[in-house]
Length: 184
Length: 203
Image (cartoon, rainbow over all chains, first blue to last red; front, top):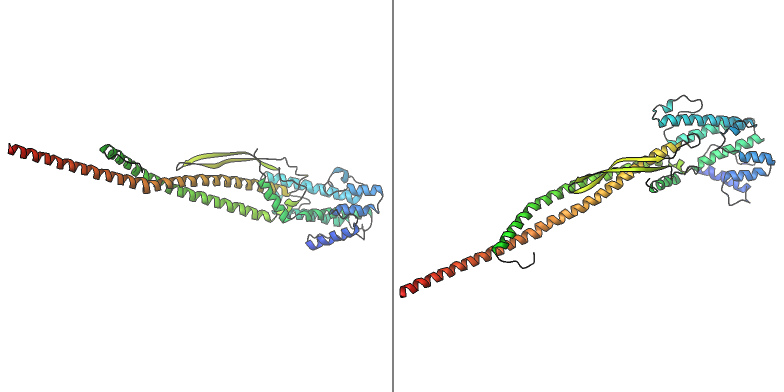
């Protein structure tokens, strides 16, 4: 664990490059891959048992809210899964209210969600920060055990998702989508 | 008009009749030209407003467009125009089309599994697609009205600079010719009369 790059909630280009560079030095054999999570897997596989490695591989931010993780034997995974599920449920309720043109959707009483920004990018960053903070909270007391590695992977996936947000690429996709109109 | 004209009263009457028709038609084409210029101005204003609206939306989207780079969501077929109905009306002889209704079909969105930003992206795609369709219609209208204006101008100029002056010149030629013929006939008649009078004095 101590050899892995220290993760911070930061999306500056310098920091992204620094983390990528460090991962690449550990994974010099797999130069073709740019996927940081795959690099983490490759590095972790060297030190974990098959079961532990399979558990690590199965863990993913996209699926963490699912029931199989909510009942996981690892306390940190189960806790974060339940937290993530509740957050997603609240976001779901927020979106349903907003769809029905409920102008007070932002003022609904939520246990986890803060008042979300009207700017979709900022709102996503709020949600990422919320999850990051929860992972930070869960990481207390876990420094070099398996739970720490699971938390590390989830944090890395949060960052990878955040870092995938790119104004130029996003705007191109938006404009391209408008050009691709096909009449129904 | 360059054809040889018959110098007779029938042709003169026909030409006068044609001139009357040209003089009636000229103000019609002048008015049409004026009306079409006004229509073009209003369509150009609408096109300009739509272009500004599209640009403004693009600028607003730019603030948060970064999220659309997230590879997990494909925007390509998330929203499509299902029906597009237009109504037509005639302005100064041109058919212009206006957007009446636009409906979209969108994929069923799972609010639990999809990211929050997708709702905003779908809304803005709908708005921008509507703006682009309106712009497409207005640009089509503009092309048709400009074409009609060019035709009205050609007709006005042809009447003003070719048909009316040439017809007037031909009428004048025939009138002079017929006047000459008439004077010649009077002269001849007078000569015949004088000869007859001289003959009767001698006898």
